[in-house]
Length: 224
Image 1 (cartoon, one colour):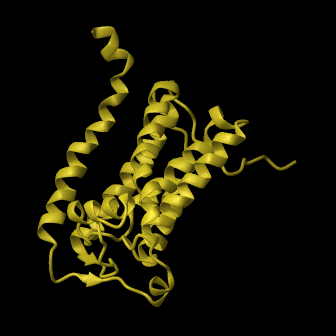
Image 2 (cartoon, helix red, strand yellow):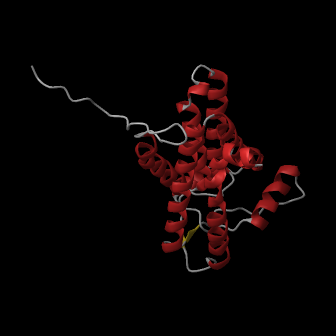
Image 3 (cartoon, helix red, strand yellow):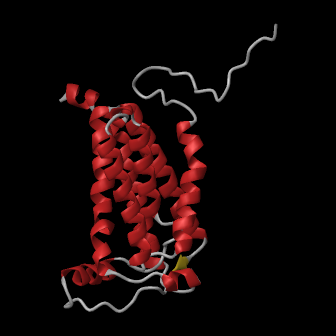
């Protein structure tokens, strides 16, 4: 047991779930009125399709699979991925805490139309239309794809990189096609992912490999 604990002690960072979930559930329960509605004309031009519930739900598998893969295969990439994910998720919670937001985009869905409509209907029962900016679905999908593209494990594995891109893109698209999010939420998530990228990948993590010097954007040389 001691050996197992020592080998997988990097699991400690996953305790973040005990911070995120209660905070998120608190917002879901308490932000029910007097919130700013995010709705643009572009949202109205995007057609609704219940079939996009499939990539929307695949988000859970996509993110979990990435965390588990790096957990067992590469601790440094694992720390990067978790730090990237959890930093953005925390910022999203802070934004929703101080800026109550939601959307009015959801259409009336007939659960008896087909299995996909039923899945959307169940989603609406479990998830409110508040606390949507920026979209965690979109942010996490971008972050996971970035981690796949940056990983040495997939450097020459073009099929995995392509599947990751298609899945990440489909998940991001599903958020607006299902009317779960406004395009404003998507743009906010993209900007957050872009802003945090140099914070996460600008330096190497020491992790379990010992001290690693930060990467330099350039080197200084003494002039002749």
